[in-house]
Length: 127
Image 1: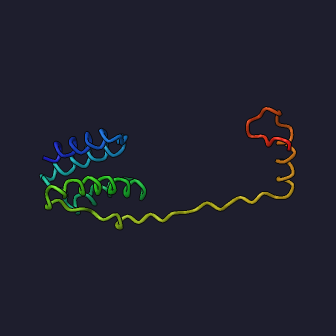
Image 2: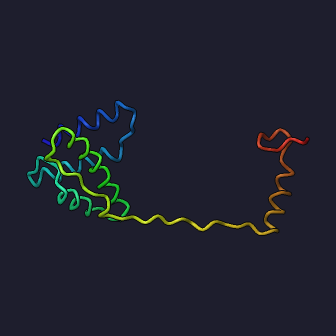
């Protein structure tokens, strides 16, 4: 039963302009996983079990996010569908450290840019 819902959801989202290559693979795989369990509605336990099969925390979170969006869509029509929480797979953001140029590096950058051709579009025009 989830197969028709998945195809309907994907066709609606694609008609609205979304490119759903990864979510479509995820949702079709989830549908097969749920069908093997004999389920006709989205269940939190099934979604989490399926997401846990991914190899990295980011992939688990991505899988669960796609199922969560799909579950929200379905729950508007049938409240028996459960919406899984993304908090199960917390993925902390790591910001890379900024690189601070040394005085010598800045001098080399300025010297190199002074050799750009006069017609280069990003070159500052003399005043």
